[in-house]
Image 1 (cartoon, rainbow, N blue to C red):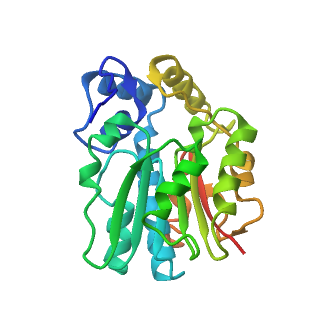
Image 2: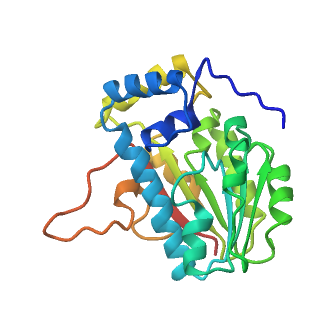
Amino acid sequence: MHTRIDTTRAHTARIWNYWLGGKDNYPVDRAAGDQIRRLHPGIGDYARADREFLGRSVRHLTADCGIRQFLDVGTGLPSAGNTHEVAQRIAPDVRVAYVDNDPIVLTHAQALLTSTPEGRTAYADADLRDVDAVLGHAAKTLDLSRPVALMLLGVVIFIEDEEESYGIVRRLMDALPSGSHLVLSHTITSPAMPDVDAAVAFWNENGTPRLTQRTPQQVARYFDGLELLPPGVVSCSRWRAAGGPENGLPAEVAMFGGVGRKP
């Protein structure tokens, strides 16, 4: 397989892997990751919060909503608790189509291509912006006439143009039937978290690809036309988190997410 991996410049998938304790990263990624952590000490917390949000949302959709098909776009590097692992522990017949266009992810794709005998897991190389290609790949593994959960975790942040990003999400959801769900997370900008803006600015000067922050209200707009599941669009650390009155909710992180159902 031809790869386009540049080990001289920090890359988001590898830095994310570093923050999550993985080994699929290079010195340049660790150096950038450490610098971002100095600017925003909580960055590791929101990397973990996003991963935990994936787990809670997939478990809820599989166990409580009867979803048996997932389209995970912008998969990222394999780590513990991938979508198919979480879902197939509950329902072994779940099918998952993974899509990413990152060469470092493609080199590790085999780690994702492990399914239960009853289910199916497939992986495809496509760009989120090419909606037709994404859906074409998905149709090889999933039955798009039946409900699908579209997973867009930390990926629309790479679509700089706001209207283009909303349009992509709408086109994908328009192609899925009633009863399908959107699971989306996004780095936010907020006056309450000024260190996040500094960390993103550093990243955009030193890393690739560039990312775009949006306000919580802008993130909520991705769910227009969908029925938002409680508690709505919130910090990923707080989405259906187990927190009792005695210990309260977890701290907010600069990664907000939500789950919406297509009526």
